[in-house]
Length: 403
Image 1 (cartoon, rainbow, N blue to C red):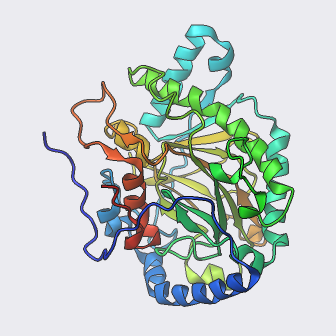
Image 2 (image 1 turned 30 degrees about the horizontal axis):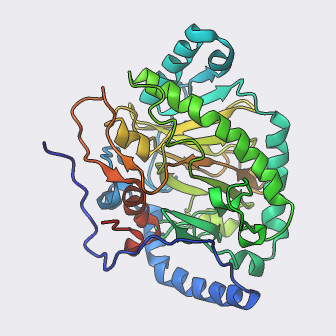
């Protein structure tokens, strides 16, 4: 049997081993030194980032672990672009799953499956998560980034643990490919006090008290969505709906706090976007809607961008690369980006988001599901899949060989 083949970058010079154990955050002095070192790295990578403002995604396909035929500019405005003002992202009613009986569950599976097979994005309503939680989350994220001194942030500068770069990303340093106008902070399962680690210490992951208990509520609510969503997708594909129950019970995830500060004149003139065009590296992403516009989705049918304006309190779900791999390209990973506001008067407003990427643990194998045709892809460990893909953002030596 012939499989689609991964072509590793020719410039890769080493393979890192998977890091284990709790993160040891830096002292204040080490954080300051890391900041200086980060400046040097940014200087070294500046040419790559400046190129990324004008680059297209196909320049980086050697890193992809699934086939991606679409071509797009990483940054909005790098070329003339068209927008799709007619296509609407489908809305799915989750009350069908919870309260609709067998017929309701079957209808929900069809609805979400068709949406994922089409655009790859869906708006979820009646998800039973209190809307006030998300309103408070927006305030907490803004406070978290604006109240924490940079020296304290740099103590937690992002490092790879397992598959995922976890910790703080300074503005314009979330990727070596493009100077994203966003600060980010990634927290995986180990960063939360879920009663699973007797040696857990909040200060290993959080720069100030009070945030972990609040955001723990958010991720616990989101965890309740994972199995219903995956079971419905598997049902749509004609698979055993419980096939991933064990893999996704207490699974790993990447919960990311994004803070997009007000856009300066210099930022606007640079040509950089708030977040480059990309596909998520996960099964699917759970993203609460927010009030400031900017999220755009690429419609593969006409190669036009769709501006998303979901109802307040709804949740956006989108497919990622893991999902494309295991579904044999049937549910493709969907390209999206965060742009500047259409209304320039809103450049002075900050924007926040709290996406949660749903993973499987590193040792799990990603294998093409039954009933999805002759496999195009061979089985691969999650750690290899994830780090090979994301090494395009973090450098060739980020990729892991788990042989």
